[in-house]
Amino acid sequence: MLDQDVLGLTPEEAAELPDSRELVQHLTGLAKRTVPEVLRAADRSGTPVVQPRCGVGGHREMLSLLRSLEAGAAPGILSVTIDSHTRLRHFDTAAATLREHPSHLNGYPLVAHGWRRGRELNASVTAPLEVRHGSPDARRLFAVSVASGITSFEGGGISYNLPYSKNVPLERSLRAWRQVDRACGELARAGVVVDRELFGTLTAVLVPPSISLAVTLLEAAAAVAEGVRCVSIAYPQGGEIHQDVAALRSIRALAARHLPPHVEVFPVLHQFMGVFPAEADRAEALILYGALSGRLGGATKIINKTCQEAHGIPDAEANVRGMRTTALGLSRLLDFVALDEDRVAEEAHWIQREVSELVEPLLGGRALHEEIDRAFRAGRLDIPFSASVHARSEVVPKRDASGALRYFSVGGLPFSRAVTDRNKALLGGSGGHNGSRSGGPTGTRLIEEITRDIDHFADRDLDRVRQPLGQERTWTI
Image (cartoon, rainbow, N blue to C red; front, top):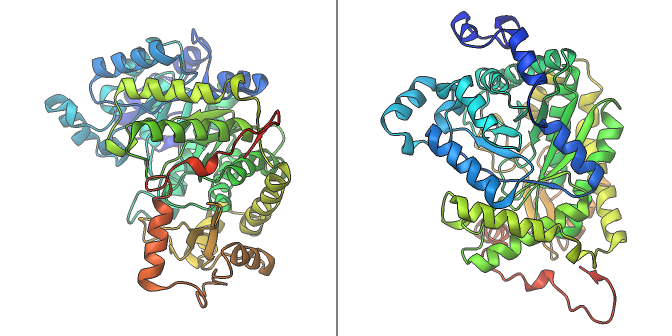
């Protein structure tokens, strides 16, 4: 199931791995819960599980980091974030850097360390591990990850290509990830369920909810077709709580509409991935706000941020502090917080309509991977501010007066007139229609407005998301 036939590994690469029988025995005999089991328990409890990001080059340092995070905040799931050389399949460079300057690595080079050390990581903590990376072709990394006993693997052929890579053809990344999903299907048939988390954050720059959810839903449908039985659909906090809650709640509704009923689906919230406040107290307030958004939206898991996001890679202490702040946002202390449910319902209706208009023409086709590739070529699917030449990046998002993300220009997205008219109206009549920007800001002014939207939380205070309690028993925001 991790051989040349399924994952396309070379004979030499396959020979470095345990055989299939030993692999299944190890995974089914783990002395702790798997990621899917943790997610199921969190779903039943109604309290999201919290997960930090973390990854350093050296093995001893990574062991110490994982143990420190678990001792300091007891996260339900821990991350092994992979270095950029491994992400790009520069395995020799990763191995050489590990030997000579491990501190120069911006993550853990799991392939260079090997699956035996991966098992050491997994055995060192109570929480199960997830591999997070950003690779358009993660076949070898996936093989080493599951051989390590790791039961969750993030990424997909769209979300780990177009936001990161300049010139990797979409057809190539979709084919590679299809093999990863096929291996997951083989493992599922052998009794091992691996969670596949789909990275809806994309570029993390003003990503409209319907683009995020459309991409992850298409990746989920492609994964399920290969036998994947557990998917985590991750959504990035946009910053307006009614829209974020509506998007999170829409995940289950869209999955029920477009995925088979036997597949487990877990909504995941990435706390704000954009420009963070530099001041620690304001950063902590934004983390708390993200926790509330995830809780009210019914997220099963929250990927937490830290007060050091504006300054570089966070240290262990900041990660622990961020997780503790998130835990406060998930506590019963804030049960009095409520939302305008009519406003949430309206947002959910339109988000689901936009997603359906994007994905339904593709899901009806016979070859989904080919349909996805053609849609991006034609601009019927798109990602704003993409690094890739294989996305048109014609979509222009903007924030409305409430801070919610809207479409100023839809580019080639096949939205109905009702959708484009609503986005234009919510932008005060300045939104474009089918790519037209007439009547709205252009040139330097448009760039300045988009820049302000990107810096939404960095250059404005957070008082606008708070209102006095008054005499009511609930706090409506």
